[in-house]
Image (cartoon, rainbow, N blue to C red; front, side):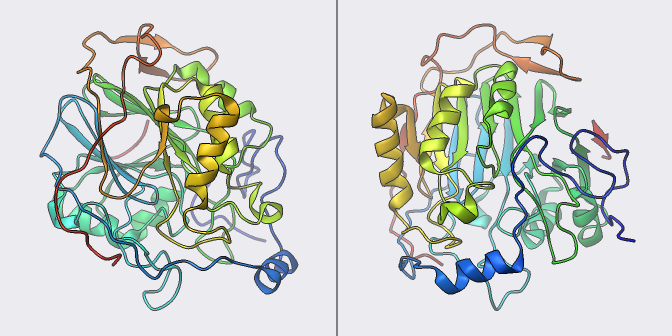
Length: 376
């Protein structure tokens, strides 16, 4: 009988005792026949071998909200003196081995050596382009950050980094990162695996980050499904900034259940009521069939079709820095959110559009070729 090596908790509305699943959504499982149909019949667009990047050197800390795009789903969030990374990947390949698998087309927008002290890491799920054990080990050795992740992922990290500081949670659990700073794990329509034998045995999620400087929702990897989870996430409050995936969506018959396309990302942006958004998860690793720059073009088309100001939702490129030109918000309140099992920090009614300006700040430099469970 199969056994889950990562998680042994009780069944729930998204865990059957062995595997996690997306309640009420189409299955994300794809068989060998589907994979062969895609791989043997695909018409993948060519990608460049490398794309120049102008790296930036972040400040050591910031009281205001500052967001730096590193690449793919790796983003540096600085707020209220706290430095936080999402899904940090500095490895050259998104793969279980160093000699094969998707290779970076762009260098990281921040060199690892130029990172400020990292206080916390937010992990969305265990796919290799999101959970990079080599990078997590480097961060642990240097800064020993608190690493927050959904159920089961902690066992994967613990096997590689025995003394890592880990906190794990289910959907809707809130975990404190620092005084006044917390993340709530949010649902996503996705799946997980590290091998052929552990499909959906660790949970996947997004993160709704609340800080005194503003709120950021990192969606993680997700399909759109029926859209119901995004309406529920909106009950946490309108994020000042949403980090939404816009790439790795083709072909749709294979990818739609697990990855949104740009038009669906715009729909999510509208449903959650985000004030601004950055398009991530595109242009770093060639994972699917669309041309490298197509997500940017299709995002522009989707925004125009939806009547959304394109300045509110931009595709982030490695090395770009986005700053909050309005300064920080001083007043926060702790409140229960609807029927959820946890409480989170939220803003008391900010005017839409007034918080985060998506003002790009590009540092000068030469282009570089693409090269509430836990323990302390």
